[in-house]
Image (cartoon, rainbow, N blue to C red; front, side, top):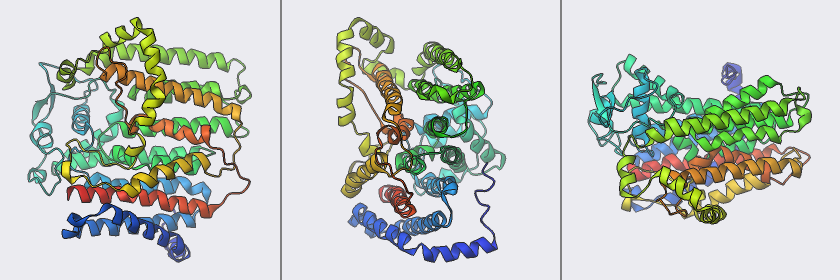
Length: 521
């Protein structure tokens, strides 16, 4: 599928590409000007005292931007998936290397689980309050959290294959989201590299999975390709995919699921067979086991017109899979997720904060009125949450205190840009208002389900207003928003507009590694 991504790289096409760089100059000059504004909005006097690394990163993102914009201008719409792949790969690699050691939320625990998986253990054993892991996890990565390679000395040591123990390993997660990271760890061990390459290669392979998943999603979807690219390139998405977090696979699987729904809904001369229903159900299962509320994505099959199905009994087939996935979700939660959840630092946290999922569930069942009020409070929770402000925010496992450099310009403009793409991006496809109702209900169900799971997992017993929400919980839902709420249909495609959208997308994305340098180096 992706053998042609770099097929244009030969002497003749390189010459044509060079010519197109000059033809695209007004677009990449616009990109550089906007990038300069962003840079000025980020930096303060502290940055200018030792600007060497900042200037290198600015030079790299400037070069990447020129290449991507020229590449996009050189190719037609059928090659959009190549543009998506290159954007994610280039900027994601910068984030992989610049982000400090295990600096992303829970990354040390994800790395621990990936290391356990690299030993062929699919379900970690919790023995005497800990898990058996490679000694480099506690000896180097735990001690070096949130530090850069310029601040530690042990990063140049060879990988120590001896075993030790660690207290947390995401035992409640399935094993398959850690396969890309595991491949990176195994390669680092096989090549006998320095220990830091365990982190870097694990991040890189996680990023590669995300890049391939997104680019395939863009290729698969017959509609809303540009909004899908913009959504997949939200900086927080790239940060999670460029780490050991399973959010990379969660987002990648989510975009694949949405792209398949778009394909089923819009593709002409295509009838959905029962095999396709099975494939979509498996995709939803893999997605849902990463975050249980997203098992509800299978309900999207009920939003597709009956005329699209080959078998007259396909709806019954779909209902049977909905029941199967529901049962699997309940069994997974009861016998795997919940019992394993406290096999970590969460046990002490739960004890100190009076958090008990079974007791909270029991409280909800016996106080339906209070629960109904909490559910009605969800829209207000969304409006007051920091979801939108997180889109372009650097997340650290250790508070940055006085080192936090914020950009009021980005905080104000970026949500407006994303909102404009989701709501008023001019699309050729006309989507009937009645066809939007089903996906809207699915979005509400999954959003409410995610809130409820957070309430049960992290809320104090008897406190139904406490919900910790983060943007990374909702990546796949973001991809549905243009389908549900987008209202600007046009009769003719305007590639110039798409070029400027790509310019802004990568400009905001370029701000992320620059902010990492400003914060940590």
